[in-house]
Every structure is written in structure tokens, then in C-alpha cells.
Image 1 (spheres, rainbow, N blue to C red):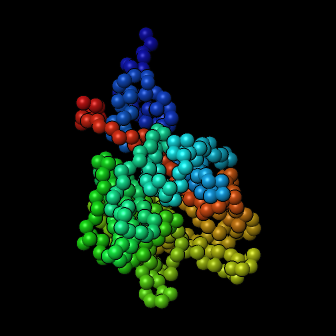
Image 2 (image 1 turned 180 degrees about the horizontal axis):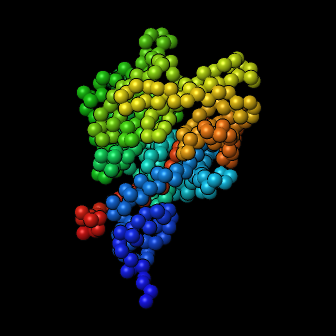
Image 3 (image 1 turned 90 degrees about the horizontal axis):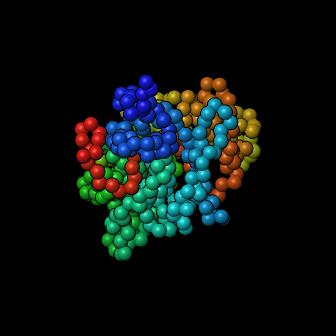
Amino acid sequence: MERSIADWPVDILTEILLKLPAKSILRFKCVAKAWCHLFQSPSFVSQHLSISKRNKHLVVYYRNDENDINDMGLIVDNDQPLVCYRDLGQELSSNFPHMYVYRFLVDNGLLCLLDLVNSRIILWNPATREFRVIPECVQFFREDSCGGIPLLGFGLDPLSNDYKVIIVHDYYSVRGKQRYHAVYKMSTDSWRVLEEEEVQFFEDIDMGDNLTNACVNGIYYWKAAKGLGPGLQEHKIVAFHLGSEVFRVIQLPLSRLSGRLLALHDRISIWDDQLHGNQQLSNEKRIFTVWVLNDEGHWTKFLKIEPEPEPFLVIQLFVFWKNNKLVVEPRSRQLLVYDLESKEFKEIGYHTREFIEFPFVFTYKESLVAVRRVSVLWNAKGFKL
């Protein structure tokens, strides 16, 4: 007698389903009510995310002001020529027309977008195609103030398994220059404004923009600088622990470092861009040295990338991918994957010479986490009450 799927042991069936891509799991929600409940349980979502981390994709984003579009592509590597298999920009525009994405952050399957035109922050899960416009933090949009654009941080807190958004905002009011810090929790859909004593120790440090930030193991890192006098700065890193919601300042291996912060094998790293030759000449060459922060808080040199011959002369490092692969931009103005072991380059299909603004490149892994606001209780076994 043949056995139906319903007769399979739950543990074996769950193990099989956990290995499926998000698209298949979402399609199978209609197979049975029990399956639908299983896919929404926190334990299943957490295990699926852990497995999907082994199969990282790439998200590439840039803003084209001439055509007024947000161009985004989700890229996957199947050991064949890389192909942009999903146009995220079109999906975003169809849900949020007339949107200006100024800040673009990615962590553990979710995207965090700052829309300047409509003064809103949006969380987006591309795997489930769900969005959430998070409530406004009134402290940052006071009528009696003016100032710069809020600086964002975003990531998954591994202690509470909760996604959080951090805002750092400098502005000017009748009281002079002010700075507010606040943390948003997705689970409660609410903000907490940090007290002055929690942040006053780094009030004299200027925070960097979102081209130089990264989230690693529940800690968000910003490049920052402290003024030492006219024309003099000491570069530092400001770290925010998503679990304890505490800031700290980290010294760099070299105070002059101005390269990009990168996540590398669950550690934070920074590359040092050493320019050789005249910047005005076509034969300029860059040597990239990557430093990694260890558990003891010390920096060590991880690798050095020497100048390659044209057309593979690297001018930018973007992100460490998987299997010792690094996404880079050569002088030929296209995104390439550089294999650190074979020293070979592989095309992605994006040509940066068409970009109006600097491109963002992030690693991305699928997640089933629900972004839409829901109110559900679960028992200890992961089933709805």
C-alpha cells in the first residue's frame, strides 16, 4: 500500500521542507493547513534562514536620477555565467511609485529602505514579497528644526531574533545643533529614543554615510571620524550592539584608513586603498589591503590584492561573497567576481559606467520572516494556539 505525504514522520518531512527555496515553500502553503502553520512558526523560519545562509545571492542597487528609477537586481550563482534573474526595482516601483531610495540596507533576508520623497522607512522581504512601512519617529521630523538626512543602521538581533532599525540624526533647532538616536523593533512595531547619557560619549564624532557601513553577528558598524583641528581627522568605527542596544567606539588599525567596511566570514573587516601613481594619469594603480577585527579586538591583515593588468585593474571592493569570492569593480566599469584562490575574474552582467550614483552591492539570503503586521500566539512546539 502506498503511503501519502500525510503519513510521513513529521521530523523527516520538516527536514526535507527546510531545504527548499522560499518560492517553493510559499507555493506549498496551500497543500495542507498544518503545512501553512508549520511554515509560519518561528522555529521553522529560523532554521530555514540558517540553511539559506549557505546559498548567498547578491543584491545590486543604484539610483538613476536621469530616468527617475530605482534599479535593483537579485543575482544568483549556479556555477554558470551569472544572471540577474529577478528585477527588484520593478517590484518596488509597482508597490511604491514615486519613491526615492536614499538609504539601502540588507541583513538576514530583509531590505531596509529610506524613502526621502515621502519621509518614510520601509522593510521589505523579497522572498515573501511583503512590505511594511514602519511608524514615524516624531523626534526626527520636528517642525522647528532643519538638518541633514538621518543615518540608518539595520540588522537582526540574534539574542531576541528580532529585526531592528537604528537612526542617528543630526539637525539644527533654536537650541543649536542636536543629535537624536532611536531604535525600532519590528516585533513591537515601536521606537525607543535613547537617553542622552547612553550616547554622549561620542557626540563629538561625525558618523559616516551608508557607503561605509556593515552589520555582522548582531552588531552594526559605521565609519566615523573625530576632528583633531583644521583639516585633521582621526578615523574610527562606531559599533551598535543590537542585543544590548549599546554603542561603543573602535579604533582602526591605521587612523588614516578611509576604505569600505565589509563583512568577512562573520567578522568585520576594512580595506585600505593605497594609490600608486598619479591619480590624473591612466596608469594609476591601487593595492588593497584587507584588515580583520578578531574576537580580542585586535586588527590583523587578512589579504592583499595587487594591481592587475587592464582591463582588470581593480578600483573598488564591494563585498565578500562565498567560497573566497569577492565582488569588485575594475577600471572597465563592470561588476566582476574575483576568486581569491584562482585569481580569476567572472562577469556578473552589471556595467557601472551606466550608473548615475554609486552602486550598492550586498550579499542576500532568503528568509520566510513575516514583515506584514500580524498578531499570532505560538506554543512551545511552534504551532498556533
